[in-house]
Image (cartoon, helix red, strand yellow):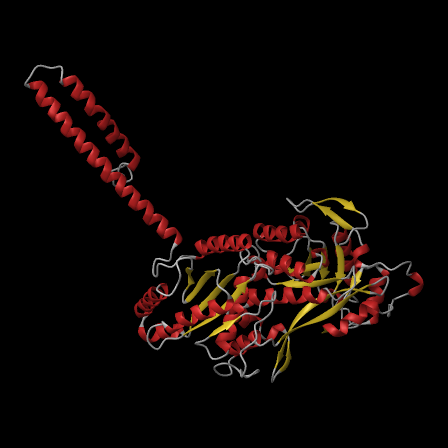
Length: 540
């Protein structure tokens, strides 16, 4: 026992190997030495030395065999799911990377399927978790009999599985997955979504498209396969005969959301952003809306919390990003689209490959990433280290970053200094309190502070001509609000970029149009996010 009362540690494996190796080397020397001695002592000692050598070699062989077995077991634990033997997410991602690289070199395709047991929680509640584990083991064992040697079966957690099918076409993948669904034990059913990658398509959203197809299968009655369309970011369409607007299994919000996502009920509206000095529309903020079949147009406040609880938030955010970028391609040069990023999406930026999705969507739509602005609320920057890492990955792509709703949460002067924001959006509460004592003084102070850090300032919630006039007197740059424009569908905002300016506070004071792309942009260090100089005439 040691001084703390703990039992002594067993000798390390390498200590045992060293001792046995030394013994194995010593035995021949003893044999050589004893062979020079007089018999019978020399013969006896030589025989003993030979026996010692044999025993040492046997021990070494047994020990090295055990080490090899333990190493193999550790590798197995690190790469596979212990319950089903399927590979884990990390190993699957490595296999997907290799498959995509091979497909690119051989000009072939890759298919991927996401499979999810239907109502598996009910099965566990009714039969117990041991029965659920046994079902998963039997199911995966049966699935392996239908998969090719090159296919990869992975368990992503719970009842969700992913199958990688290198070289399989979409039709071949659908047939394979149909066979897998037929092998689910007992009365339990399973739904699946299939996506296919061809050489000419983007690769980063392959798993996301398979996920979207899975939701189509779920909302089309479950126990079936749905195949994603091969367009970047497109939401798969439900099979013919699926009732649009009717929930899958009742009227719960959860089921309605699944169907809304699968059948394309979500819309993007755009609220223009206006340059105060010129009165021109220079960009717009993309705003999510749900065109509910019976309740009308819903804002995110009515469904976003439930979407997050369902795990749909990141997937829904990816759709918003790709749809907004596609719409931006219809706007004139120099304009930009602003997209809101939730705290959850920012937290998972690296893991969910949101940066890659933005890059792929920009490439597909022919849009410069510099014409994209990501808005982040103060509540999303409570963890400075993780926030900075996510923001730097976005900045490296070329997108611009805005601090949204400034003045309502956690942001401080230090965070404005340390985080690489290009734009500061003043919360609408400042505009409503503009005429209260000290209201304009606070607004002027925020403006001076943000500009000192090299940021453009935007005022939200401008609802009266008086508010607009007061901001013009402060030489404010950009504004947004119902007094200027309400959120509108994409087809209504496009003409606004070409219209002559209207509602300019004082036309005689307008020297020249000052668009967003003409405002100065701070030159920032990618490593620290600190302002280290100015680059005149560059975009914000």
